[in-house]
Amino acid sequence: MTGDRVAAFLAGDRPDDVALYLTADRISNVEALLDRSSAEAVGDGVLLVVDGDTGRSVFERFTGQDAMDFTGVAMQREGHVDADLAGGECPESGDDQPHEPAFVFAFSEAQNEEVGGLYERGDVVHAYAQCSCGTAYSDKWVVDERDG
Image (cartoon, rainbow, N blue to C red; front, side):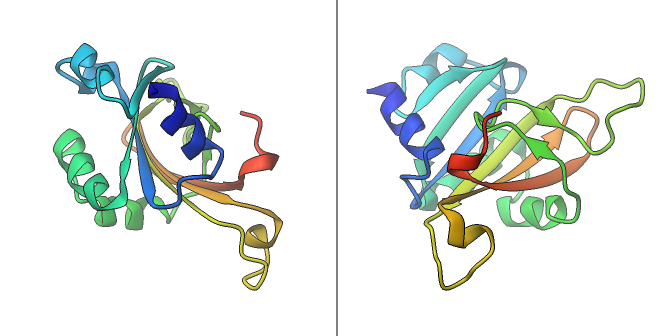
């Protein structure tokens, strides 16, 4: 079922998958994408969950960027990404520009008490966002501790 894979990813239960949130204006045929068993409408766009090996090429196809290059840049700035990956708060918000995520790339890591910190408390989602203003930023959280 469509929502099962997305819900499992957001719950931290699919550490071998990646999620890609894309606003509808980045997708030429939203309905065709939603027909995939791993996509669902969220916010003003689509959340697609695919296996990690496929994720990088899907990310590049929809964004025109290399996933690892993008995450490296986004890691340099902290912001807030909502738990559903469809919204957030850009670190540049507060000026007169709109600040909505244009796309988000995310993965999760299983709880690892040996590592400590966030990882000791539960499964952790890592999210990398590109704001409509052009700012790239990142966020990470323990699944059971993030409401929105």
